[in-house]
Image (cartoon, rainbow, N blue to C red; front, top):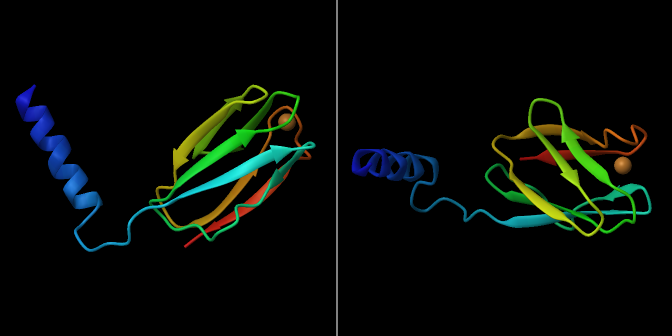
Length: 103
Ligand SMILES: [Cu+2]
């Protein structure tokens, strides 16, 4: 167990080298059957929170990246592992989409 903890610490040290920009958190609210864009730009390593402020169940799904199932009032978060464009949709309501650009 001690060895595993050491390896985990080493991996974290590599993933977040000293002096790197501190990772931040942003929120995408789901309201009135739509994703609302985050208020600030996104950077790889950031935590992105999805909050379902709607009265229906929704998902925040980005193929191959994450798939969050959110009851009304529920929040879940993901870490944006890499830069690029994330096409996020709701599996229950496929017309709900948002394109997130991560630097
Ligand atoms: Cu939905």
